[in-house]
Image: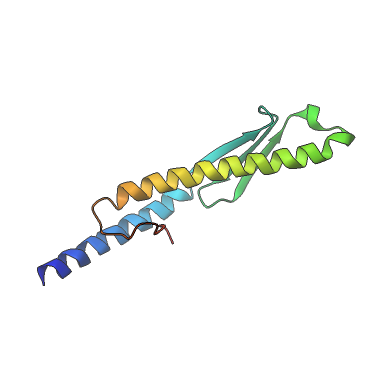
Length: 107
């Protein structure tokens, strides 16, 4: 019975930490770049696009497809950085809890 009470206590503690982490995620940002810095995008912790910066030299009529590809690459770079930060914070938060392997938090 003590184990169940201890587990419930840890679950409540984790829920509180999760709520704090979700609030923190909204203030986190990550920049992703592509084309050697020709395109930079900024995402928040929820993955929403916040800003796009494009080097003016990219504004040529025949470079449209390249520019589109660079924007996508920069977005994916920023998204990977945000996911890595969230995974690290989640791992720190859940240290010591019996969570099945492969289970991703936050849900």
